[in-house]
View 1: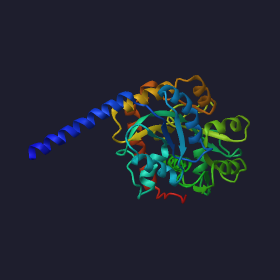
View 2 (view 1 turned 90 degrees about the vertical axis):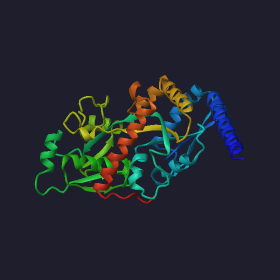
View 3 (view 1 turned 60 degrees about the horizontal axis):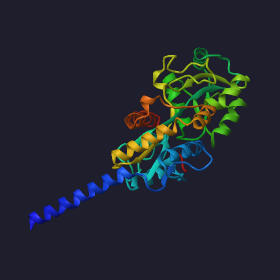
View 4 (view 1 turned 30 degrees about the vertical axis):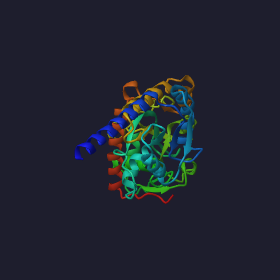
Length: 328
Protein backbone atom coordinates (compact mmCIF):
# COMPACT_ATOMS: atom_id res chain seq x y z
CA UNK A 1 0.00 0.00 0.00
CA UNK A 2 2.73 2.46 1.01
CA UNK A 3 4.75 1.63 -2.10
CA UNK A 4 1.67 2.08 -4.30
CA UNK A 5 0.93 5.48 -2.77
CA UNK A 6 4.53 6.58 -3.21
CA UNK A 7 4.46 5.43 -6.83
CA UNK A 8 1.19 7.28 -7.46
CA UNK A 9 2.61 10.46 -5.89
CA UNK A 10 5.70 10.18 -8.09
CA UNK A 11 3.56 9.77 -11.19
CA UNK A 12 1.47 12.86 -10.27
CA UNK A 13 4.61 14.91 -9.59
CA UNK A 14 6.16 13.82 -12.88
CA UNK A 15 2.96 14.69 -14.72
CA UNK A 16 2.88 18.14 -13.17
CA UNK A 17 6.52 18.76 -14.10
CA UNK A 18 5.86 17.61 -17.64
CA UNK A 19 2.78 19.82 -17.86
CA UNK A 20 4.70 22.86 -16.55
CA UNK A 21 7.54 22.19 -18.99
CA UNK A 22 5.11 21.99 -21.89
CA UNK A 23 3.35 25.18 -20.76
CA UNK A 24 6.69 26.97 -20.54
CA UNK A 25 7.63 25.88 -24.04
CA UNK A 26 4.40 27.11 -25.63
CA UNK A 27 4.03 30.26 -23.47
CA UNK A 28 2.30 32.57 -24.10
CA UNK A 29 -0.88 31.25 -25.67
CA UNK A 30 -3.36 33.85 -24.40
CA UNK A 31 -3.48 37.52 -23.27
CA UNK A 32 -1.30 38.67 -20.38
CA UNK A 33 -2.54 41.06 -17.69
CA UNK A 34 -0.14 43.81 -16.61
CA UNK A 35 -1.18 45.19 -13.22
CA UNK A 36 -0.21 48.83 -12.69
CA UNK A 37 0.03 49.86 -9.06
CA UNK A 38 -1.33 53.40 -9.45
CA UNK A 39 -4.43 55.00 -11.02
CA UNK A 40 -4.76 56.06 -14.68
CA UNK A 41 -3.19 59.34 -15.70
CA UNK A 42 -0.01 59.15 -13.63
CA UNK A 43 3.58 58.37 -14.58
CA UNK A 44 3.21 54.64 -13.90
CA UNK A 45 0.17 54.36 -16.13
CA UNK A 46 1.91 56.33 -18.89
CA UNK A 47 4.95 54.04 -18.77
CA UNK A 48 2.73 50.96 -18.93
CA UNK A 49 0.98 52.31 -22.02
CA UNK A 50 4.31 53.14 -23.68
CA UNK A 51 5.68 49.64 -23.01
CA UNK A 52 2.42 47.85 -23.83
CA UNK A 53 2.53 47.88 -27.63
CA UNK A 54 6.16 46.84 -28.25
CA UNK A 55 5.95 44.25 -25.47
CA UNK A 56 2.86 42.56 -26.87
CA UNK A 57 4.44 42.55 -30.33
CA UNK A 58 7.52 40.83 -28.89
CA UNK A 59 5.38 38.23 -27.07
CA UNK A 60 2.84 37.70 -29.83
CA UNK A 61 -0.09 38.09 -27.42
CA UNK A 62 -2.15 41.08 -26.20
CA UNK A 63 -1.08 42.85 -23.00
CA UNK A 64 -4.08 44.03 -20.98
CA UNK A 65 -3.18 46.96 -18.71
CA UNK A 66 -5.20 47.01 -15.49
CA UNK A 67 -4.80 49.87 -13.01
CA UNK A 68 -5.17 48.74 -9.39
CA UNK A 69 -4.41 51.82 -7.30
CA UNK A 70 -4.54 52.35 -3.56
CA UNK A 71 -2.46 52.11 -0.39
CA UNK A 72 0.75 53.29 -1.99
CA UNK A 73 0.74 50.55 -4.60
CA UNK A 74 0.32 47.70 -2.11
CA UNK A 75 -3.14 46.61 -3.29
CA UNK A 76 -1.83 45.80 -6.76
CA UNK A 77 1.26 44.13 -5.31
CA UNK A 78 -0.82 41.94 -2.99
CA UNK A 79 -3.03 40.87 -5.87
CA UNK A 80 -0.04 40.07 -8.07
CA UNK A 81 1.58 38.07 -5.26
CA UNK A 82 -1.55 35.88 -5.05
CA UNK A 83 -1.81 35.34 -8.81
CA UNK A 84 -1.06 32.02 -10.48
CA UNK A 85 2.68 31.84 -11.25
CA UNK A 86 2.08 31.04 -14.90
CA UNK A 87 3.30 34.21 -16.58
CA UNK A 88 -0.18 35.53 -17.36
CA UNK A 89 -0.19 38.12 -14.58
CA UNK A 90 2.74 40.52 -14.31
CA UNK A 91 3.22 43.65 -12.23
CA UNK A 92 4.64 47.05 -13.14
CA UNK A 93 5.92 48.77 -10.01
CA UNK A 94 8.50 51.27 -8.80
CA UNK A 95 10.37 52.50 -5.71
CA UNK A 96 7.13 52.48 -3.71
CA UNK A 97 7.25 48.68 -3.68
CA UNK A 98 10.52 48.78 -1.75
CA UNK A 99 9.33 51.51 0.63
CA UNK A 100 6.08 49.63 1.32
CA UNK A 101 7.94 46.92 3.23
CA UNK A 102 8.55 49.42 6.05
CA UNK A 103 5.73 51.93 5.49
CA UNK A 104 2.97 49.31 5.69
CA UNK A 105 3.74 46.92 8.58
CA UNK A 106 0.55 44.94 7.93
CA UNK A 107 1.26 44.22 4.26
CA UNK A 108 0.26 40.75 3.10
CA UNK A 109 3.23 40.12 0.82
CA UNK A 110 7.01 40.18 0.89
CA UNK A 111 8.52 42.11 -2.00
CA UNK A 112 11.59 39.84 -2.13
CA UNK A 113 10.02 36.45 -1.43
CA UNK A 114 6.71 36.78 -3.27
CA UNK A 115 8.00 38.15 -6.58
CA UNK A 116 10.51 37.27 -9.25
CA UNK A 117 11.76 40.40 -11.05
CA UNK A 118 11.56 40.20 -14.84
CA UNK A 119 13.67 43.25 -15.57
CA UNK A 120 14.16 46.99 -15.17
CA UNK A 121 12.26 49.30 -17.51
CA UNK A 122 13.66 52.78 -17.00
CA UNK A 123 14.89 55.40 -14.60
CA UNK A 124 14.17 59.11 -14.23
CA UNK A 125 16.38 61.75 -12.63
CA UNK A 126 15.21 64.38 -10.17
CA UNK A 127 16.64 67.74 -9.18
CA UNK A 128 17.26 69.26 -5.78
CA UNK A 129 15.66 72.62 -6.51
CA UNK A 130 15.24 75.94 -4.74
CA UNK A 131 13.04 79.01 -4.98
CA UNK A 132 14.28 81.55 -7.54
CA UNK A 133 15.41 84.17 -5.03
CA UNK A 134 17.49 81.93 -2.78
CA UNK A 135 20.86 83.65 -2.10
CA UNK A 136 22.89 80.66 -3.30
CA UNK A 137 23.89 79.59 -6.80
CA UNK A 138 25.49 76.21 -6.05
CA UNK A 139 25.34 73.49 -3.42
CA UNK A 140 28.31 74.81 -1.44
CA UNK A 141 26.72 78.27 -1.16
CA UNK A 142 23.37 76.69 -0.34
CA UNK A 143 24.86 74.75 2.58
CA UNK A 144 26.55 77.88 3.90
CA UNK A 145 23.24 79.76 3.73
CA UNK A 146 21.22 76.90 5.17
CA UNK A 147 23.52 76.47 8.17
CA UNK A 148 23.43 80.14 9.10
CA UNK A 149 21.88 80.45 12.60
CA UNK A 150 18.23 81.46 12.60
CA UNK A 151 17.24 79.97 9.25
CA UNK A 152 13.76 78.47 9.14
CA UNK A 153 13.99 76.33 6.00
CA UNK A 154 10.88 74.81 4.48
CA UNK A 155 10.96 71.89 2.04
CA UNK A 156 7.84 71.13 0.03
CA UNK A 157 6.97 67.65 -1.20
CA UNK A 158 4.09 65.92 -3.08
CA UNK A 159 2.72 64.07 -0.06
CA UNK A 160 3.75 62.02 2.96
CA UNK A 161 5.56 58.79 2.02
CA UNK A 162 5.76 59.73 -1.68
CA UNK A 163 9.06 59.26 -3.52
CA UNK A 164 9.49 63.04 -3.50
CA UNK A 165 9.03 63.12 0.28
CA UNK A 166 11.38 60.22 0.96
CA UNK A 167 13.98 61.72 -1.39
CA UNK A 168 13.70 65.10 0.33
CA UNK A 169 14.22 63.47 3.72
CA UNK A 170 17.20 61.46 2.47
CA UNK A 171 18.77 64.56 0.91
CA UNK A 172 18.40 66.62 4.08
CA UNK A 173 19.71 63.72 6.15
CA UNK A 174 22.85 63.38 4.01
CA UNK A 175 23.43 67.15 3.83
CA UNK A 176 22.94 67.53 7.57
CA UNK A 177 20.17 70.12 7.20
CA UNK A 178 17.32 70.73 9.62
CA UNK A 179 14.18 71.68 7.71
CA UNK A 180 10.42 71.77 8.10
CA UNK A 181 8.82 69.33 5.68
CA UNK A 182 5.65 70.77 4.11
CA UNK A 183 3.33 68.18 2.50
CA UNK A 184 1.12 68.98 -0.51
CA UNK A 185 -1.55 67.05 -2.34
CA UNK A 186 0.60 66.24 -5.35
CA UNK A 187 3.66 67.50 -7.19
CA UNK A 188 1.80 70.35 -8.93
CA UNK A 189 0.83 72.32 -5.81
CA UNK A 190 4.30 71.78 -4.31
CA UNK A 191 5.90 73.19 -7.46
CA UNK A 192 3.59 76.23 -7.51
CA UNK A 193 4.55 77.17 -3.96
CA UNK A 194 8.26 76.66 -4.65
CA UNK A 195 8.07 79.05 -7.61
CA UNK A 196 6.12 81.53 -5.48
CA UNK A 197 8.71 81.37 -2.70
CA UNK A 198 6.34 79.86 -0.13
CA UNK A 199 8.81 77.02 0.42
CA UNK A 200 12.58 77.11 -0.02
CA UNK A 201 13.56 73.70 -1.38
CA UNK A 202 12.03 70.66 -3.05
CA UNK A 203 12.73 67.52 -5.05
CA UNK A 204 11.46 68.22 -8.58
CA UNK A 205 11.42 65.92 -11.59
CA UNK A 206 14.33 66.89 -13.84
CA UNK A 207 12.22 67.11 -16.98
CA UNK A 208 9.79 69.45 -15.19
CA UNK A 209 12.60 71.54 -13.70
CA UNK A 210 14.54 72.04 -16.92
CA UNK A 211 12.54 74.89 -18.59
CA UNK A 212 12.02 76.62 -15.25
CA UNK A 213 15.74 76.54 -14.46
CA UNK A 214 16.69 77.76 -17.94
CA UNK A 215 14.17 80.62 -17.63
CA UNK A 216 15.51 81.62 -14.21
CA UNK A 217 12.26 80.77 -12.45
CA UNK A 218 13.89 78.12 -10.25
CA UNK A 219 17.35 77.23 -9.02
CA UNK A 220 18.72 73.71 -9.22
CA UNK A 221 21.64 72.52 -7.09
CA UNK A 222 22.20 68.87 -7.98
CA UNK A 223 20.76 65.84 -9.73
CA UNK A 224 19.55 62.98 -7.58
CA UNK A 225 20.31 59.97 -9.75
CA UNK A 226 23.28 57.98 -10.96
CA UNK A 227 23.97 60.12 -14.03
CA UNK A 228 23.60 63.70 -15.17
CA UNK A 229 20.37 64.80 -16.80
CA UNK A 230 20.87 65.50 -20.51
CA UNK A 231 18.49 68.46 -20.37
CA UNK A 232 20.69 70.23 -17.78
CA UNK A 233 24.15 68.92 -18.67
CA UNK A 234 26.03 71.39 -16.46
CA UNK A 235 24.20 70.29 -13.31
CA UNK A 236 26.29 67.77 -11.32
CA UNK A 237 24.93 64.72 -9.58
CA UNK A 238 25.07 64.50 -5.80
CA UNK A 239 27.52 61.65 -6.24
CA UNK A 240 29.89 63.93 -8.14
CA UNK A 241 29.69 66.37 -5.25
CA UNK A 242 30.67 63.67 -2.76
CA UNK A 243 27.26 62.39 -1.65
CA UNK A 244 27.32 58.88 -3.08
CA UNK A 245 24.33 57.69 -1.05
CA UNK A 246 22.22 60.06 -3.14
CA UNK A 247 23.00 58.17 -6.34
CA UNK A 248 19.44 56.84 -6.34
CA UNK A 249 17.00 56.65 -9.22
CA UNK A 250 13.26 56.74 -9.63
CA UNK A 251 12.85 53.38 -11.36
CA UNK A 252 10.22 51.08 -12.80
CA UNK A 253 10.44 47.33 -13.22
CA UNK A 254 8.32 44.34 -14.24
CA UNK A 255 7.77 41.47 -11.81
CA UNK A 256 6.01 38.10 -11.79
CA UNK A 257 4.64 36.04 -8.87
CA UNK A 258 7.17 33.82 -7.09
CA UNK A 259 7.18 30.32 -8.50
CA UNK A 260 6.91 31.44 -12.12
CA UNK A 261 9.12 29.02 -14.11
CA UNK A 262 12.52 30.41 -15.04
CA UNK A 263 11.89 29.62 -18.70
CA UNK A 264 8.86 31.94 -18.64
CA UNK A 265 10.80 34.65 -16.80
CA UNK A 266 13.49 34.39 -19.48
CA UNK A 267 10.89 34.75 -22.25
CA UNK A 268 9.38 37.80 -20.55
CA UNK A 269 12.82 39.32 -20.00
CA UNK A 270 13.79 38.74 -23.63
CA UNK A 271 10.51 40.33 -24.77
CA UNK A 272 11.07 43.31 -22.47
CA UNK A 273 14.59 43.80 -23.81
CA UNK A 274 13.21 43.71 -27.36
CA UNK A 275 10.47 46.19 -26.44
CA UNK A 276 13.06 48.59 -25.00
CA UNK A 277 14.82 48.73 -28.38
CA UNK A 278 11.68 50.14 -30.02
CA UNK A 279 12.52 53.53 -31.55
CA UNK A 280 9.20 55.12 -30.64
CA UNK A 281 9.48 53.94 -27.03
CA UNK A 282 13.02 55.29 -26.73
CA UNK A 283 12.00 58.65 -28.20
CA UNK A 284 9.04 58.95 -25.83
CA UNK A 285 11.15 58.05 -22.81
CA UNK A 286 13.88 60.52 -23.80
CA UNK A 287 11.35 63.33 -24.22
CA UNK A 288 10.04 62.52 -20.74
CA UNK A 289 13.48 62.67 -19.16
CA UNK A 290 13.71 58.90 -18.70
CA UNK A 291 16.71 56.69 -19.41
CA UNK A 292 17.05 52.99 -20.12
CA UNK A 293 19.35 50.87 -18.03
CA UNK A 294 22.52 49.56 -19.71
CA UNK A 295 22.11 46.13 -21.33
CA UNK A 296 24.11 44.47 -18.55
CA UNK A 297 21.56 45.74 -16.00
CA UNK A 298 18.47 44.58 -17.88
CA UNK A 299 18.62 41.10 -16.33
CA UNK A 300 16.26 39.62 -13.71
CA UNK A 301 19.24 39.34 -11.35
CA UNK A 302 20.08 43.05 -11.63
CA UNK A 303 16.45 43.96 -10.94
CA UNK A 304 16.37 41.66 -7.91
CA UNK A 305 19.59 43.18 -6.54
CA UNK A 306 18.22 46.71 -6.97
CA UNK A 307 14.95 45.82 -5.25
CA UNK A 308 16.82 44.30 -2.30
CA UNK A 309 19.09 47.33 -1.88
CA UNK A 310 16.16 49.75 -2.16
CA UNK A 311 14.17 47.91 0.51
CA UNK A 312 17.05 48.50 2.92
CA UNK A 313 17.73 52.09 1.81
CA UNK A 314 14.17 53.37 2.14
CA UNK A 315 13.49 51.19 5.17
CA UNK A 316 16.37 52.86 6.99
CA UNK A 317 15.18 56.34 5.95
CA UNK A 318 11.59 55.67 7.01
CA UNK A 319 12.59 54.15 10.36
CA UNK A 320 15.19 56.78 11.25
CA UNK A 321 12.80 59.63 10.51
CA UNK A 322 9.64 58.02 11.97
CA UNK A 323 7.69 58.36 8.69
CA UNK A 324 4.23 56.86 8.62
CA UNK A 325 2.22 56.12 5.47
CA UNK A 326 -0.35 58.69 4.53
CA UNK A 327 -4.01 57.71 4.55
CA UNK A 328 -5.09 56.71 1.02
